[in-house]
Length: 356
Ligand SMILES: *Cc1c(COP(=O)(O)O)cnc(C)c1O
Image (cartoon, rainbow, N blue to C red; front, side, top):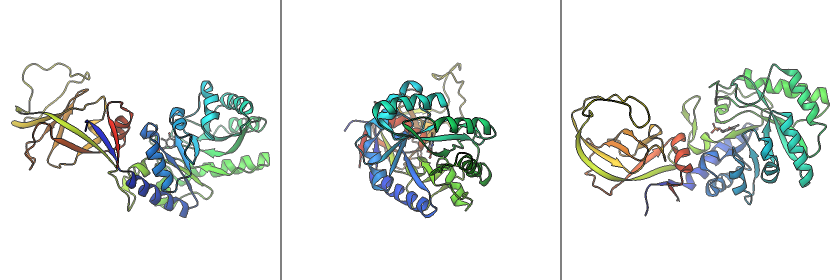
């Protein structure tokens, strides 16, 4: 076996997907299974499908391309670039959009390929990432008007995203804006929109608080399926797993050393001036993994008596003084990963993927 590797428990992902899907369906919401943490893992996408997901969402077309043979609808989450319009039409059925020039480019490519690409028009209700600002009603209506004249694209609904840049909490009021805007569009243009895409995992707080505005019928869910977590309320969804992803790394050094570095302090390898607490002599271990391939801030040793002290690009430094186990060189440490660490590990070509 070669280390480090990330162990992905497919059964746990499938289970989480099923639990989350059931909750959503009970509230009239169809969940999009967001795979972007996995760098295009077909196994993970398939686990979501097996759990009841019918649409996969990813931020990168390269990942959706890997999923091309999976039996699910494919959604591009990050606004498409004009330069990738052709690839978008090839590998995604639906995308989130806010720019008419891009939608025109999509239209052209879709017509060429004889396809119809579905458009969700993004409205920014306050988080200040993507979308037309909700108060700019003229821009919204002009954009809709223009989309309706284009061939090869179909406006299927509107959507929003929250708690990503501005860290704004989804509420009856801000997500509710979408319900009003949808109604205005439908009346003004005498059309029906099938979709209100009400946000990411953070929007599950609206279901938790029984405040979901009537008409919101889609959510795009990554973290809640991957970790069973609703970050905005910092709650676990009952009956889900938060440990489907484990990092296994090998110990390459164990030495008795002080807790305080010796000598004059400059900047560390990441341009920080480090500070240290004097805890006397320690038994310290080094694992062969570092910031290039994981994120030590977002991982927890499964041996609760071990403490992560820090890391550089390829070294993870741990305090193993208080562990009950007598570790030796070559032993493997296991870590439970939070979202950012999963993202790093799954993206790194140096971390093997093992599916169980
Ligand atoms: C990442 C992303 C999601 C999923 O976010 P989670 O918090 O992981 O559920 C949904 N929509 C968009 C537009 C995203 O970028």
